Image (cartoon, rainbow, N blue to C red; front, side, top):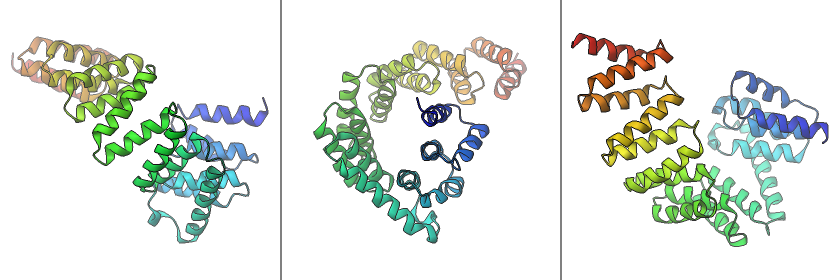
Length: 293
């Protein structure tokens, strides 16, 4: 592998470990002599807050390399137009035009139509985004990213039946896409189909054991179904992953207290404090229970 490709790959992997140090690394990479490194750095900084993104990525709208300029424009496309400096606005629009032209050049391929759909979605043009996603699916019915993003657009427009159909297709065809199973579970819960929601959220939680939010949402669906014991077990699993999570702790503690299971609530608080001695909610619950003795 070429050194630049190795370095760019390493930068991409750092995105999985977001902290101040990695942000500093990406920021420094924006000034690298190699365009691939600058391009990768921009992609790695897309989730920053608005002000920081403008400060760091805005200057890349003027980069000497087309791919870097296009990526900078794409990264800034999710921001309100009013957030851009007037001096940058023309260059931003030029970057988007260059990006669209590049995607249309190879528009016979599903990913290019999909990318145009993503751009349209980012700048708030929902109908155009939907059209591009449908075109992408028309070219390649197995290109699931277009189906997932089309489902997200339908959901935002309140067309949940169409969104559900698409997500079910993707999950059926790709059983290991646990993130999509999670999205489907959330959608079903939104529609108050808690039974199926619990099933898909559980599938997602099993496939992503360290993503405790999936298990927590499964627990909420189970509690809606009054499956108290199953809900309790799911909540206990969330606390195994994140013992300091206040929301998870309070949900389980309130479940115990609602059923007057004070000893279980006490054991829960004690167990959490063994793992996280500074957990204030557990301290408060234990103090309250001791006062009632």
